[in-house]
Image 1 (cartoon, one colour):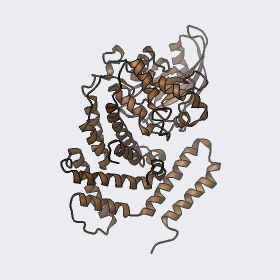
Image 2 (image 1 turned 135 degrees about the vertical axis):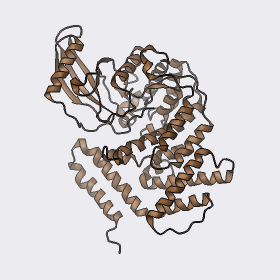
Image 3 (image 1 turned 45 degrees about the horizontal axis):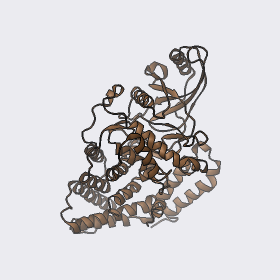
Image 4 (image 1 turned 135 degrees about the horizontal axis):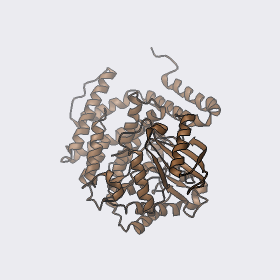
Length: 135
Length: 356
């Protein structure tokens, strides 16, 4: 079963309490670290809310680049390991210029990199995305 | 190649000074100043994981330096990065810059004997002003000086870049690179290879750069951390407010465009992204000052190349700093949080390479 409140709920209320109840009493020299702590809680809450979906999408895009079948992976650790393996392969291939003779495939890689980066920013810093006019 | 510090600027002191150390310091200063020295004040100025800076006020009782002096004591930190310069080398670089007429704190004395403070240190004159980047770009009191400040910073960089390989005080910097662009790409690839995770976007940026690497327009003394946050501004002082360029510990021979691009890179605009010269002004005044003093033309394609490299560099430094936390060497919330920032740099890499 899933306990309630959810991880996201807990992290959000911890952050609100830190900012609204604790922060006014935190000495000036620790204020910056307290704000970083609040930001880290916000990142974690967003990551928890997205769950495994971004990783599944990343893995599916990577598999498509390599024309590989995408057998369903149920187990989280196996999913992460498979994504990590394909990510390393992509990085090495980009360095070697492997996609540059095939414009369609290069474009597929480009779209994948943009999609992955946007998603990581949705978790890590959505305000930065907004300031860049993206979402 | 060295790495500057991404940490914020007001960290708390972690290392105290004992009464014994204080008296050894006073004895060192008395010998250096050739007169009796009283230490009126010693306190940590600002944080940072690489060096510690202490505010040091002294009174010299007699001799050539008789009088009061406001100084900075700069210590190697306990966790000093292996590849940042030693204090002796930093002292020599500061001296070379000071002699070239660059606005820097005058370097006075070098303390290499670990018997004094346990670590090497240098003593330099203290300049007025603030270095805190977000204040320089945002506070209203700096609004009247920013335009002139950008031009002046271009001029100062031009003076720095007039220092060339062969300078007799800087032989420890080694030979000048033949091909700074290719060496930078190789350096950052090696850094990515040593990371536990793969970074396809950073690889994309480096591959883009490899195919467009500019020929070196010359090799000069690069500051390598020339950016908002590393110079002091005192709005009340002069028309441009600049009092000095700080943080020289990463300087070395390189391509002039590397410094120009690092200064203008979006990651150093402190959120004021439409002022492309360090968050303080447009590029035009910065470039104008640079051209006038350096006598060099500015090649926009070379700047573009080095701006891609700048964002890769920022991300690589972030990975290393996070690793100090992850490895258990230095558990730190701030270092941990830096680990979530590379996607900002990667978005800019994608934009600069036309992928976005």
